[in-house]
Structures are given as structure tokens and as C-alpha cells.
Image (cartoon, rainbow, N blue to C red; front, side):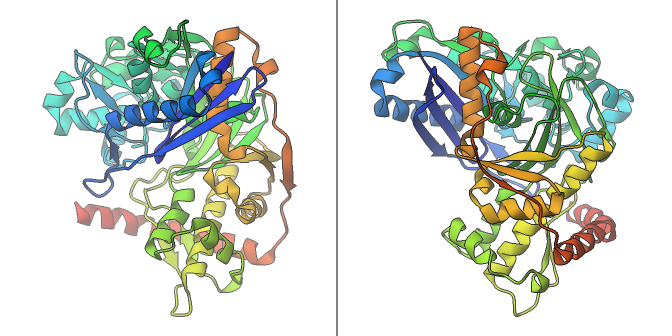
Length: 491
């Protein structure tokens, strides 16, 4: 039997085909674009996710036709929080509002005023990236579309609907909506009512490793498959990456540098601490939870510098950054899309501090990589304040290709950073593992093993880095009011 793991990312839809031994037989990816029609807005067309999914499946089928014909299960992972609005005929009403969209920051305050116990219910502060505040924004500014909305789906769940004809979501992805009672692993009628919705607007909930639906027979026939194919519940992208790297037990961690940056800690209980922007979510496996610190611009910060400096090869740019004298480099606040942990400030913006005419693209690249590492160090401090003490974390995401970035993150955060042979495939591997569990019923302990560690990168003591981290941390409090004032002036 074979299994398909598909990740509906922000910048790319990726997929892998695995067998029962979890060998990767084929992989494929299709790039996506993000639209920003106004400052602070971030949107995608859900049809683009679907067409990209069909394209990656076609490429994998072409690469491994015999193995693909044995496909028994599919699972999806995906970017979290995006509001995908459907009418009664399940037609898309507008572009999906994504996780890094900051337009609904005022509605976050309103939501917590409407439901004073919201943090206790959801385990999280209301942040504009989450789904519920987006619906309050729609009520105000696009009321006709809000009234026409019959179903709200997350990005991967829209693709699941196209695959199966059913509206279904998993606990980990649903945790990022602010509509889930995270301790009870069920929709909260109180939170739904506060945004003018009910359970009728929501997908059915299942565990990520459970069989959720069957793929449409018409698609199976088109793919040359003559037996049922199960769709498992799937997962939000970070929970899927954790499953792919075997981060499923309490105390296990991962550090992800994708478009966003995440420090993820597994837990066997519900342990919320929303005060410093720490997320408490359900894991995609039964009776397990996790905590996360999240920054909104991680590897995307380096991509932005590459675009700014017209550098076509990001790997080459990262290599140039390694040669920079850190004592002479500018500091960088990586708040290009606002920030979550620990500041929860949608008005925060990116800052280069200490620029001079001597600085070039290598200095900017170093500053961006270092600033992201400092932000991850802030995230680790927030987790510690929540009682979670990690000692090591598996490195995943596009940024994990850089050993230098791993060393910066290790030294700034004090964590041992583990690099794996297939670390960049964490999310898709996690989805493939969920598909395998959904089909076979095998236990997580059997399927979710840790991949081989390629290298363990330990923190290196550095007075220069420690001094720069202190200056980095002093900048945001000095600029907080200026960020808010600039945003107000731009409206």
C-alpha cells in the first residue's frame, strides 16, 4: 500500500508518496502566490490550492505509476487560520483571508470583550491571524458576503472538500480558529455565537490520525485507481511537521523556519498560557496537546532581503551572511507582517537599526537571519514562562537547509538544534504518516518514529551575540508607540 501526504502551504503545495516502510517514493511541488490588495492584507484564491493539488498528484502519478496505483490513503496538512467562505452551494465567495493578514486587529479586542472567558475556552489570546476575528471584520465591512456564508473552512479543509465532497477538519487545525474549546476538543457554541455563527457553519471534527472520508470515486477513476481511498483527518502544518519528525511525546520540540517561525513543544495535557502570546492547541493525535511560540516572518524575512537586493540565489545570500562580522552588522526586527509571540502586536513592523553606507546585502542578510534567531529566543523564553522547558528541538522548514542559521538559533535560544536527513519534508511526511494511521489503524508509537539525526548543533557562548540580543530586546519597547501611531496615521 502507498500513502500520499500533501501540504497546502502559503508559498507552495507540496506532496510526497510513501510506502508502508515510510520510504519516500516520489515528491512534487507547485508554487503559490499571495495577494496583498491593501497594506496588512494577505489573501489567496482557494482554486489555486486545488489546481496546485491536482498538479502535484499528477506529477507523482507520472513519476511512480505502479506505486501510485496502490494508493490507499491521503492526508492533508496546511497553513492554519485562513478563512475560506462558501455559500450554500459550496461555491467560494471571496479570496481566502490568510494567517498573516492583520486587518482584524481591532476585532480581536471586540471579541475578547464579547466573551471575557475566551482565553480560558480557547487557550489563546485573540490575534488577527486567527479565523474568528476575520469573521467579525467581514460582518462590518462585507456584510452581504457574511450573510451569504454557509460554511467556513480552513485552507486544507477546502481541498479536502474538493477531494471527498465532505466538510471535515481535525483538532489541531481547528484549534487555530478561536472557535474550539481546546480542552474539550469540540466547537464552542459561545465563541461561535460571538461571531454570528453556529455549528451549522462548521465542518465535522475528527482526530488527525482517524479515517475522515473517502476520496470521490470519480477522482479515483481518473487516477486509474479501482479501490476506495481513505482521507485521514490531517493536521495544521506545525502539528503535521511534528508528526513527521516524531515530535509526539511530552517535552519533545521542533523549531520551524518556514514562511513563519515556530517553536513547538508537545504535551500530554492542556496547558494554556496566553499572556505572552503562547498558543495552546490540540495535537493531531488523540489525547495530546501542544504549545507553540510563533513569529510571522521567519525564512520569509531572508526571502524579502533577497528580493530587496535582487539576489536570485537565497542559498548563496545565506552563505555570504556567514562571512559578516556580527559586531559591525545592523540589528533587524523581523516584524514585517506584525508579530505574535511574545508581543501580539499587529502594528509592529520590520526595522533595520544601525545602518551605514558601509553595509551591503550580506550585512542585511546576516541581520535578517540573526533577527529571526533572536525572535525564536524570545519564543523560547515565553514557553519557559508557561512552564515548558525544552532542551532540544528538531530543525525543519526551508530555513533548515542552512547550518549557519541553525547555529544562530541554537546559540540565541540555548537549545540543541537537531538537523535531520529529510527535515525539510517534515509536514508532508507527517501527513503521509497520518494517512497510514487512518488506513491501517496502527498506533502513533509505531508510525511516528524519530528520523535519524544528521547533526546536533549545540549553543556556542558568544559575548557579541549576547550583547546584540540585549539591544534587540530593548528596541521593541522603545518603538511600540511609534508602530501604533504609524498604523493609525496610515488608515
